Length: 343
Length: 244
Image (cartoon, rainbow over all chains, first blue to last red; front, top):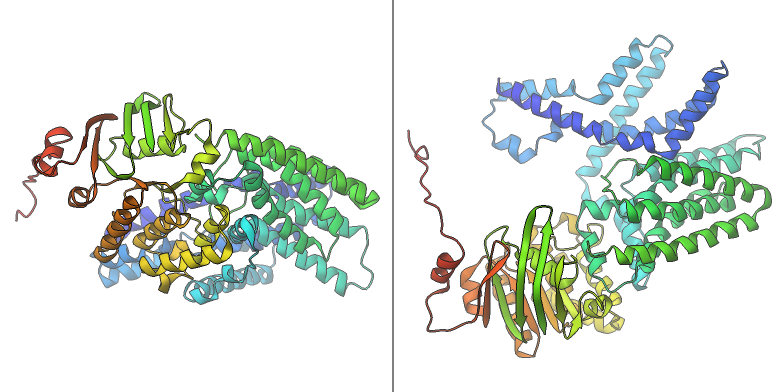
């Protein structure tokens, strides 16, 4: 009975946790893939071009989804509760049923078009991801944050903090997977299609660009936002430090693909993302996708793609336009941030 | 150094601060009150973290609303939520503060080393703040408040969650700063510390100031005054507790 009650609580916690992935449906990358799949469906053809990207998306989602449901109960609480070893064993076994990954695997197995080999590979990948997560949890010395390089000066140090915050955003890992895919395609394909690289660069920048809508997301989840308000720093400097982290990650990930196109999208995404970050700030949980308001995401996506395609054809002119747009936005929303500093 | 006149702050129908006024000169001034009395809100109004619905606050003669940047440069604050970056280590917080407040790098490093040693944080300098205990987080916030050697210190509950040795060190630090002309304004629930440390005591209840006086060594004990003016403890007798 006790075990059932605890299981009920774990079930509720898991349900709420799944609810925190709702930003995915307003994520620009997901919207683009959904659009590609929908267009193919409308034309009566199989949306095969969307499959690899959906696969990337699921691979990234595996990390947060494959966590142990029993972890929803704090370990100290579970140890202190008067639960017998038998009830503990029941809890251990039954809580696995609440794992979203298990439901997904069951769906895969029952979906006739998926081969058992693919389903087995998926299960193996989920187990591998879980093993990796557990290893890193028990090895705090492998803290990836320590390897983020630092720079001198206020902006440099704030940028380092923002870069570390971005390391727990799924957007960055999706972009990383896409970037690795693009590099492998460039290296391993005998005749890589040059027209593919601008598109891949846009997709990478699109994945990172969603974070531009939630620049203060991780600060709002903690208390750093108070410190930003207390520091004698102008709003422009604060937004610059935040945006510089996004630009740095886009730079690194699109460098081996098509830098001009990626950076054009990144500057444009930040120019429009400032509006969401300053006017509609929303907390961002660790290991989730970013997203703020659908209309901002759509405007950001359309403007970014148009300018980025322009940059693919005419280069510097469109990149310069996006930089000017970014600087204007920085000045305007820096002032707005300043005015809204005292709530 | 700190002047507040008729500060009012409402959140919907609730009035958190209802016309609070205060003056604090160089020295140590403590603000007491029960949970939810408006202490932290008042501190946020004085530091400019919240804009008042009416009334005004001045620090070092500067209006908080019209000279926010100058005010921020002259104050050191422990805010209610501590205002810390989970993705920076303790030492990186102090490096950042040194840079933000325009200290020479060498000077900032020397002050940071002093603060880490005095607050017994030197062994933990490389730990990320999201891996620190509550006491370590509070001491980091205090170190950040002290680093730029501000003229006014505004500290929200600096002694809560702190071990006795560090608590004694913080008392000494605040006394020493006050003796050199710094205005220290802090909130607390720990009456013995307030009684030992403060030269002036304010008490707030329901957003209104109910006591504003310099400490008189011949007056009644602080605890008596507090229970009379601020709140009485309800009878704490749970019939089922301990019953078989």
